[in-house]
Structure formats: structure tokens, C-alpha cells
Length: 239
Image (cartoon, rainbow, N blue to C red; front, side, top):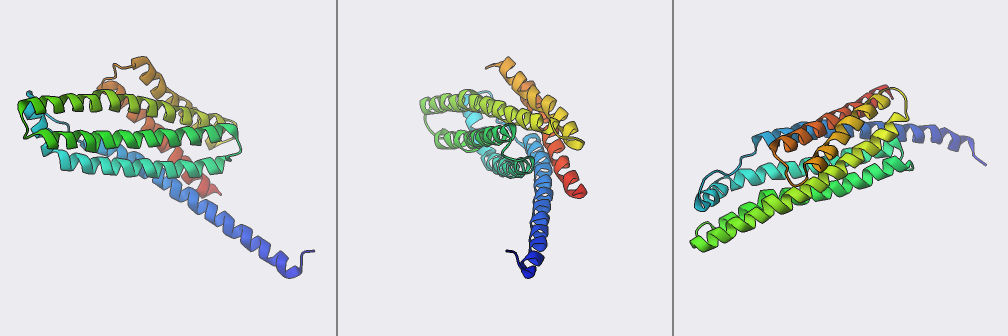
């Protein structure tokens, strides 16, 4: 039997939980918005290698190595922060709902793959260049082939799979959002388009991905991230 003193404690406890949930939503919304902006900026600020001969390309990669690695460290941090934000979003949408759980699982897997891609692009490729830049012409040519495997084959394939998984996540969350009223339904509509198009573009392009596909995918992902971040902030404000 509940005593009078115990009954007085329950509302306070529920109120504290509610405040914590609202605070998490606001923090997650800000995290998603900030990461969407910063990650897009890092892509724009990144530098690529230049040169015509193998030696010139390797020297260029060594020259930009420090900047390239710093940019990718920021990108990795953004990936982790986005995963945090979408974990909170999934909790608010109710992880017992199948589309929400599918969304979180596929997004987490896509994030792990994207982290792998940033390590390959930011550290492995430039590390190979630094190790072989002062070697023999044969060693330099071998390094160029290794970098080709890393950048043009492994990196491309990993990024393609990661983008498709993240698109599946956006679509799954959007399906859940469409079943709710108000702003959630609007964001769900945005997610179906901005979340579904990257997967369609990547699948259609296949191995022939060009800069336009990459930029288009990143911009569409940014639109979805901004919509999700604004949703979290609006829900917190109206709670």
C-alpha cells in the first residue's frame, strides 16, 4: 500500500525524468544540426592531391597529409555525434516500433562503415604516400597502385554501402514519423525524399560514381539531418 509520503515523491520523480528527456532531445537536436553543418563544411574545405607524375602525386599527398588527417578527424567526430543524435531520436520515436529499430540498427552499421572509410581516406592513403615518397621509382609505382586500391576500390565500395544503409535508416524513421501527426509527418515526408534519393543515386551509378553523385548524396543527407535536428528542437520546445 502506498503511503502519503511515497505518493508525494512520485510526481517529482516523473517530473525529473521528463526534464531529462526534454534536455536530451534539445541536446540531440543541436548535435544533429551542428554535425550536419560542420561535416558539410569539412568536405568543402578538404584538399585533394595534385600532380601528373607518380612522384608529384605522392609529394602532394605528403604535403597535405596533416590537413587531410585533421579534416577527417573532424568528420569522424561528426559521424559519432550524429549517431548519438539519432539514437536519442529513436528513443523518442519508441524503439519498440519495428521501423524505428530497423532505422537505428542500419544507421549504426552505416556509421561504422563510414568511420572505416574516413580512416582509409584520411590516414591509410596518405600514410602509404609518406612511406614510399622517397623510395625507388618501382616503389613509388607500387605505392600509387596501393593508393588506387584504397581510394578507388575499397573506399568507394565502403562509402556506397554506408550511404545505402543510412538511406534505409532515414526511410525507416520516416515511415515511423508518417504515422504521427503534425511536424513529425512533415519531417517524415522530407525523409522519404532526402533519405531515399541517395540510395537510388548510388545504386543507379554503380561503380561509376562521379563527383556529382557524391556531392548530391552529401547535400541530400544534409537536408535530412537538418530536418531531423529541427524536429528534435521543436518537440523539446513544445513539450
